Length: 229
Image (cartoon, rainbow, N blue to C red; front, top):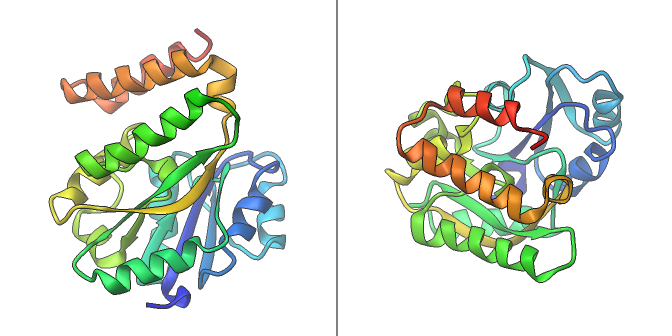
């Protein structure tokens, strides 16, 4: 497998501050597609100037990522959040891993949250071990997947939240995911704005509620109503 066979899909909405670094970090890939969900800032223009193909879709991470996957030409799809960016050799890591292990559908990368502190290092460690033990990467871990496997499970589900978890659950039925050293560098703003303990607890509570059968749409409504709490 070569970098030319990888298409990077980046869903974005008002990410003018981050999109240039994100796009340039995956310039080694054969194709970089930014799916703009209706930004009212310069996200699309900056992304295009950085070398990405820009398309527009309805907003919503699942909708945007499926739209990007639909127009992508690569045999492998890598989904990267617009406020994240990858290490210089990350694309090479993906190529090597999938070449050496053709039975795997793909996987994700270890994180580096861009803030100091032992709490963030523990969070990174826990997220990596979630993939190793449970086989469930989340969207901010740069999920990469062979196109045929992505299509086999129907892509991202049309849900407003938990779309990454549902995709990972479906892919886990095919094979266990890889976890590569990466890292994917992660913007810390959501933890900084709400506090790392509160944000981590909220994320965990959402996962538990989902596991107990609460629908993603109800979870999204709850999350929206408690954004500032």
